[in-house]
Image (cartoon, rainbow, N blue to C red; front, top):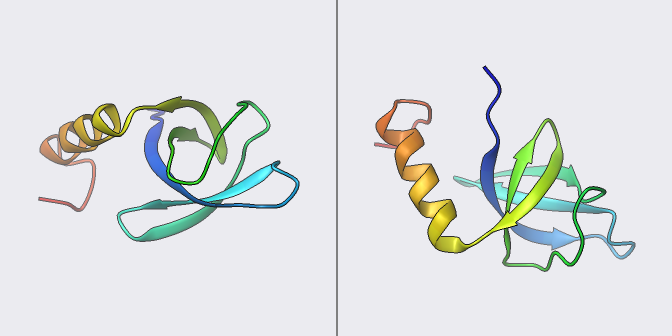
Length: 76
């Protein structure tokens, strides 16, 4: 099963090609090659190290809550 997870962008490198996202306190480097106009504080859907698109904070929080309820994250 492949899932895209929402995560908050916390850093963007000066070239704009890569970013660091935070998901539950875990930070991960990702590529922004597939999306335009991403800013620090935005939420993106990530899959295999790539941001696929941006999502609203509300949509990201709702999705993460559903993942938690399904037991797909360590969050209660």
